[in-house]
Length: 304
Image (cartoon, rainbow, N blue to C red; front, side):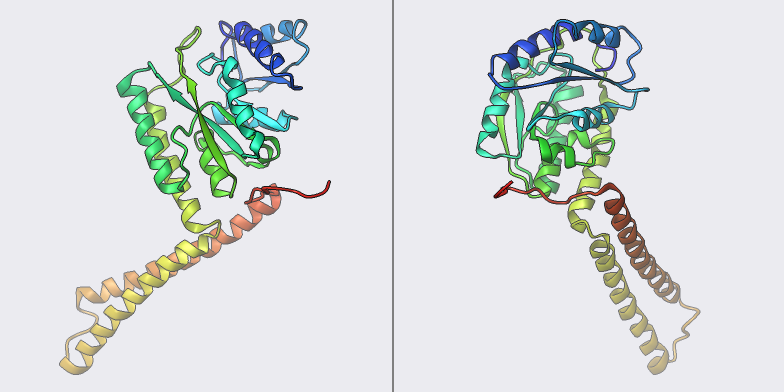
């Protein structure tokens, strides 16, 4: 939540009631993303009536993905449900996601139906972004963002960076986790103003490019940059051989021809690609070592 004082009390009341009706142990984690209104004060007071409520207050506004990541890392459940605090995700539908996970699915996505937001500013950009994400990742989920239920160990193993909150199904899918979706409602905000605009929709393009890069490299940057570098080097070798033949058998000048400079530039580009792949490979190993990243999902464990 970021400045959601108009929603927080209703959200906690309805979420606590919905989870209590499911007959499972649960906790409610409200993450305040650097709120400057009464959101945090109200969470403190609500704890007196709702013992299952926990508050995580971030020191400054870091954005939706940062707040989401903080909440996931604070969670302790076998299943983690992520949802917005403005009640556009209905607490009464949490059970649809959780019950779908009982067959061992790693992530269940809530596919929104009956959306009433602006067609131009929200719905069309969302459809385009989801189509692009499905294309580059191979993940079949139709609605990537928003209401999700994720296996707890899978969720806490994810290393989320800004923008990844839009990619959760694709990230789990690319690690080998099973995904599914159920239809959920998409009511308007309970109160307050939306924090979204067309500018955020534009950011999805960069997220798609990054996701494509991760999938293309298979977590090994050398595979992508090495292949591109070798292809450029092969093209350079053919051009260089043609120039050399022209020089030896036809007496054409070598260094005075524009193609000579093209050959030199291609050679330097090939070296750059190979060097870039090597450097990114080392950085990837370092990041995985420091963050203890796990590029896989365990489908089943036998024994304790």
